[in-house]
Amino acid sequence: MSKSKELFSEAKKYIPGGVNSPARAFKAVDNDPLFIERAKGSFIYDADGKEYIDYVGSWGPMILGHNHPAVVEGLQQQLLKGSSFGAPTKLETTLAEMVVAGVSSVDKVRMVNSGTEATMSALRLARGYTGRTKIIKMEGCYHGHGDSLLVEAGSGITTLGIAGSAGVPAKLAEETIVVAYNDISALEEVFKEYSQEIAAVILEPVTGNMGVVTPNAGYLESLRNLTKEYGALLIFDEVMTGFRLAYGGAQELYNIEPDLTTFGKIIGGGLPVGAYGGKEKIMDYIAPEGPVYQAGTLSGNPLAMVAGINTLKLLKEEDTYDNLEEKGQLLEDGILKNIKKVDVHAVFSRLGSMFTLFFNSSEVTDYQSAKSSNTKAFSIYFNKMLEEGIYLPPSQFEANFISLSHGKDEIQTTIEANYKALLEVKKQVEF
Ligand SMILES: *Cc1c(COP(=O)(O)O)cnc(C)c1O
Image (cartoon, rainbow, N blue to C red):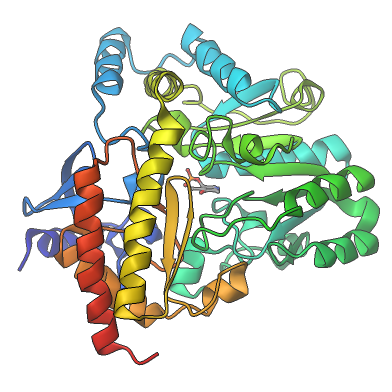
């Protein structure tokens, strides 16, 4: 038995399902999770000492690659000064200033400890600010596990086939209206029906949590116009896309200014951080300035701030986004060639350093088309890739990430493994 399997059966005795986040279980791919010992750059090492090229990147934060010396050094220095004070530090202002400078729609930003906390707080703020209660979310977008947002939520929810979640009061779920991603006319109808009741529309401007799906031309503009017309706030959940698709996130790429933006993942540089920000007028509605309460014992934690500051600094200094695009394109070219050569039903969806290989015969544009992918084919593909030393997210409905530390050699190795894995799929699955 592998060490990972041993550790997993031990973990299951003390931790529900043996994991602290369901997305880590390998249930959808008929396997058990790898237990990880360490990671460096684009490589990750399991408990048996086997090396993998990593495309999970801790689900998004590790854009520099694992264990970047600048991040590690900063953390070591800060540890000697103390790990938490529960009082303001200059570090919080520094990171906030960097976010404000980098993201044009953000005047002020509040730090929290996770993406979930960021979206929950942003919703409360939107409801407090507008005095309205209903929220519109898009089918297949994941915004963390807050009660209001666990409806048709993609990611782990789709992977595990849970419709929403037990334990979410129906009364609360009723306040969340779900419409299809990329469907503007459905959104118009909902606005007509509920007009003055809608506090906010929240979405992943580019989705990662049903796999990578990009917005149709004009979709985000229409969203911006509709929300303005009806006096609802537009919330971009950029927990995944912030500092990933561009330094200023998807909103920079598509040139749209939301009212509120949520962050997480990259801004914590691998430590637990979330944040939400927006126009001063709205943000000053939060306590202690305003009536919307939100707090946190470890919020703005000095270690997390240091990791975030050093990560953003490097992203800004280096030729980050061209570099990531170049490697993304290289991978895309190779994989498209393989798909053609092997002749399998698969489409490669990519924006910059985020990508998903959907086992689907047509383009994926929303949740319904994502769900029509062949998950059995994905499972075969995933396990063969793992055998070949490529570590992918264990679900069809997730984004894969390229980091700055992925070299062209690793990309090439991945393309070769992809060819073998597609052959395996072809052998076992009838399309
Ligand atoms: C990961 C993610 C979240 C949740 O963040 P956590 O830190 O896991 O709570 C929210 N929204 C999006 C878009 C995400 O990708």
